Image (cartoon, rainbow, N blue to C red; front, side):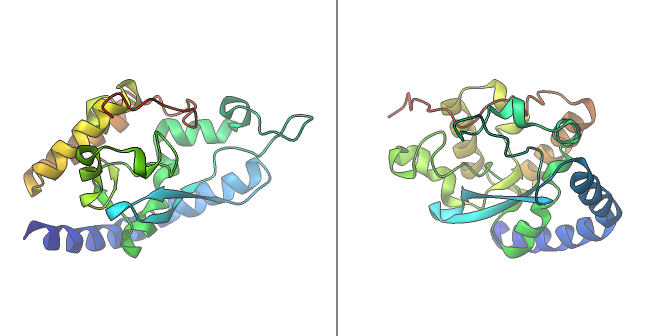
Length: 203
């Protein structure tokens, strides 16, 4: 029953959030454009509910600088000065309001993983695939328990725990903890490389 209410809350608050933050969205968009060449919005394929692929939106925080052989430079070398600020404040996540309106995401839920990272969909165990039973979120249980500071296998266990205990009370608890973490920049290691191959220790 709560899943239906959850979707209605997502749409309502994403509309309110988009309207209230529109001056910030416009200011950030202009700053991204002035800071470096490239599109304002970065689109990336992610795994959503039921493992379906969708495009997630973020403000662009990196350039596409390449070495002499045409290979992309490491993330830390492509991160712009303004992009570093956006990541530190989590403002790069604001365009995800539009993903919520489209039905790709929710405010609260397991963070949507890349199609190949930490591993491909077929490499998840049956237990781990349960994280895809709900819409992915801007923040989730794993994010308030360490974010990138914890191992991927542990993150996914938190995701499944969230699915098993889905409720309005849990969503509110995660939301308040997320706000606190953003304000204090706790566990905000949001600059590291995420494309390297990981080992599924539970497989």
